[in-house]
Length: 364
Ligand SMILES: Nc1nc2c(c(=O)[nH]1)N[C@H]1C(S)=C(S)[C@@H](COP(=O)(O)O)O[C@H]1N2
Ligand SMILES: [Mo]
Image: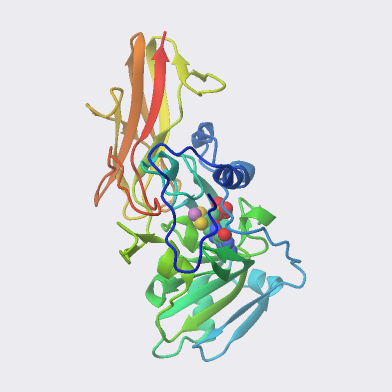
């Protein structure tokens, strides 16, 4: 069985009993998640931030790198790194999550990067405002979308491409979108988009184009692969589906106690157990977090702390009076638009699936 697909072929869904393949393991070994114990930190140390690279990491020389901003504008811009750094500096603390987070727990499993729960991280990103660059270039009457192209190149389901994603013009000029050159106070590292990437607060990861090369203002709708084919919520192969955009609410708990090496099953001592975790949403602020110790049958509200910024996750705490026995912890977040589902919201490509985390725990 090979996963190299021909143009137009849909992503493959694994058979009900089909194990994770070497192809999926290869992707998982390149694209790491954030160890869940790092949920404790407001800012994820750069090396622990989750990583997702569709093709290869391009190594670009910051001294010769340029950003071309053109298309349907009055004055195209060609900017080097120094020119970007001269413009007003803007910083935002942003929680980033891959749209495929949770995919490997779906049944049946869409075959792609097999994330469990860890494709998330929070960093402070610094750069200049995309809206101000677009204003400087002078967006012309009739502009519809803005596309962002990276330096990386590959094939995906038979389509050869540079990684390219677009936003509508209104999404591009709203919401504090950054053309970022620093992560956690240091120049971007190669794997996170050096020297410059896009940051789209509140949106799933695919919108945050790394290794940025060109920004193009379009007078017609963008129809590139990553918007029209890849990141869509499709019920079946014939469904064109809705585009993936903002992050659905999700809460995670730092697995308590200590783990078994192979299974990572947790052991805790009976008595009060201080549970800690984070919750976030890109739709509207998180308003509630609830915890269940019986696999989602009954729920109790947790205490919510303050977020570091409007685009960052919120801490929460819960004291569990643990009695000896076996338990499955679940945690779920709600925002102004709804509550995280306990059951899988399945779609063909396993996108924007925010089914609750499950942590098996033995209390001794
Ligand atoms: N140029 C480019 N940008 C990209 C990608 C990519 O493969 N190429 N992956 C996207 C996806 S799917 C995600 S989830 C985020 C991951 O960002 P991170 O690796 O910095 O966490 O980058 C996005 N930007
Ligand atoms: Mo992603």
